Length: 93
Ligand SMILES: [Zn+2]
Image 1 (cartoon, rainbow, N blue to C red):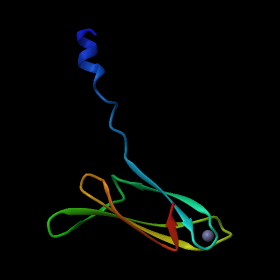
Image 2 (cartoon, rainbow, N blue to C red; image 1 turned 90 degrees about the vertical axis):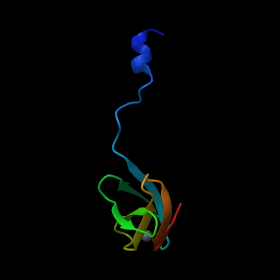
Image 3 (cartoon, rainbow, N blue to C red; image 1 turned 120 degrees about the vertical axis):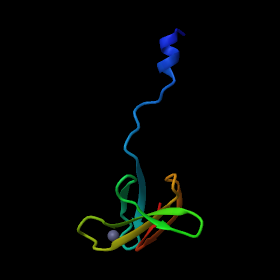
Image 4 (cartoon, rainbow, N blue to C red; image 1 turned 135 degrees about the vertical axis):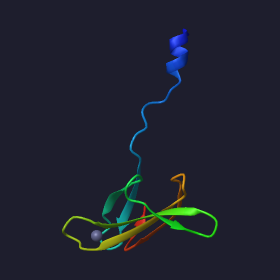
């Protein structure tokens, strides 16, 4: 390995926009819907006693055969690790 390879070979690629993807299954019709949270733009910060946490809320709906709305709430740490997840009207799968 030459010097240039040593200098540049270990660098990881450009940081990418970070998304958190998840799937929920509609409790009414069983359809599985993918949702995606933009970790740069969709999070709102809230302050807990000893830390900052980040919330994302999404409302998902399947195709037009079923009008069940699934409300997804995700909670992330400051390092964007998922801490908690809740969904009403569906379930994570
Ligand atoms: Zn449905």
